[in-house]
Amino acid sequence: MRNRSIPPQIHDAISFDFSLQPCNLINCDNNIPLYWINAGAQEVIEISLVFKAGIWHEPHNAVAQTVAALLKSGTTTRSSLAINEAIEYYGASLKTSANNDWAFVTLHCLSKHVIHILPTLRAIITDAAFAEHELEIYKQNALQRLAVNLRQSDFVANRNIDALLFGREHPYGKYTEAADIQSLNSEQLRAFHKQYYAANNCRMFVCGNFTDADLTAITDTFGKDNWNESLTYTTQNIPDIAGSEQQLLRIINDETSVQGAIRMARMVPKRNDPVFPELFVMNTVFGGYFGSRLMANIREDKGYTYGIYSSLLSYMHAGVLMIGTEAGKEVCEQTIIEIKKEMKLMQETLVPEQELLLVKNYLLGSILGDLDGPFSIMQRWKNLILNDQDSSVFNRNIAIYKSITPERIQELAQMYLHDSAFYELVVT
Image (cartoon, one colour):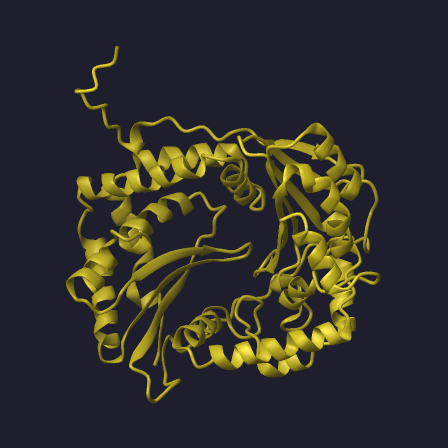
């Protein structure tokens, strides 16, 4: 019998062995790759259809996100009310979104209901109508949201830092103006939808606790015919990144504001570069979690902000290291000085072993949490697959997180934390 007066041993996350549950693949009759994981105790299912239909691909500003937003707003035979009632009747959740590179249509429901919801899901993706009256409602709401957001310093800062980094003409640097929303029309949306929400531009991800019959129903619904327009893809001409010659920018957005939004950013290698996982560890030490150097100095010691983070943003065609915070207007410039001090400290001194061990355990502990449950496991796989990677990359990253040294962290800081390489923006 176990002696309960003796506490169990505590093990650091760094001592665990990590294994990513295998992901199965079906190549459908119409060549859609369907990735699936059948796991979990709860009888729920997630179906995600991913398209290369993000902002990168849109012919006019605001088209990609508008198409994603209006997918549930009716088909040629069913109104938006009928669509939403058909989903909500079964207690399901359907989310649609578009980012810089991808568009996502994701369904969550009880496994026993999936067969009943699949026809509605198919109709939304293949037969969306983009009716004029639905578009007008969307445009009114979008214009109101934009007007409100433009009064927020953090929103204005996010728009302008991207424009500084990439240039206003680059897909990652452009942003939506009121005139872009006003000029949208249904024909634009239908053309974009037909071209990019197509079978040969789709990848499917299915996970949860489901039956073979459920999987067959999904492949029968989406994997038989070549729905929507057939595309022949050629190598795209990647636009040149034309960053601004002006590296320091100060914008007064609201004379009465008591707070400013700070953004500092530079280009770095993207996710599929071998240095990325090492850079990820360095960034975590610097500003990537609540116990980071930036947080300890600027929040805990100086009290300039409630929170400050640095993040690695990895797009299909670029990588960015972004530092962001909101601080009192009177301390914004001093906050930037302290950020640069922390950059210099990272370049000139080794990270103590105990601090690095804490970061390693934080990163690996987060991964342990992500490996619990089919939805989280599939998200790991989705990040790999959409970046043309496999499980060997996951294993290599784990090895790097465990073994990276203070010396290598310092080398990376000397390469990527020179303040002269950063665009610097304050919006008050």
